[in-house]
Image (cartoon, rainbow, N blue to C red; front, top):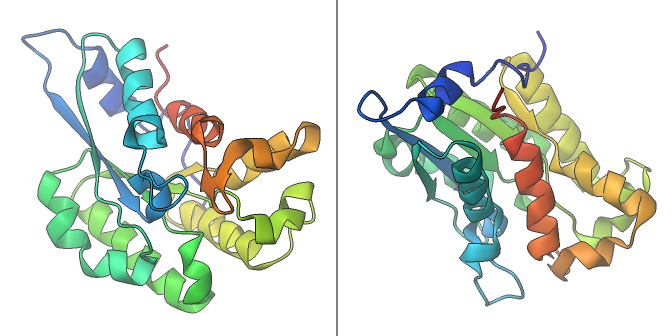
Length: 220
């Protein structure tokens, strides 16, 4: 199998986003994960309005001015995917999401690839069974893993990014490759310009993530 096509995977959702009142309905997008989608910048500061879930919401409203969209954040700082999977049914599916985005790659280094694979697979299966579209995110930078962003593709962060790509392909769902986007940035610029903390993006970094996510919602 291969991962979903950006141009068509969310076709039914973008159709709703383009629909005018009174035929339209609310679209719920849930961002599930750790401190990055939760909006942590220089810990303990939380800057939700400059984090990618909010930037995604703003971008969708510019692209689809007639849409009613909720971008709901169920992320918890410091959490890994095993913990996120344990509360997935209650705290994610309870919002009746149309789209679920999962972002745990940074913190999953602490639990290992096998445990992370089991947790991500459980969340994917539950989300798909509930009728939601799924988009998996590869990790944003951690400066202790900076060589990975120079194109080396080595280290735990790169290994988790590769596993997340495989999970998207195996389940024919969406992939938003933040890891690759930051690699591309590092090829021409200073990676620290995208960070507010050693492993938390600043506004510039969150804009890179939001830009990749918006590719899944084509206006045309």
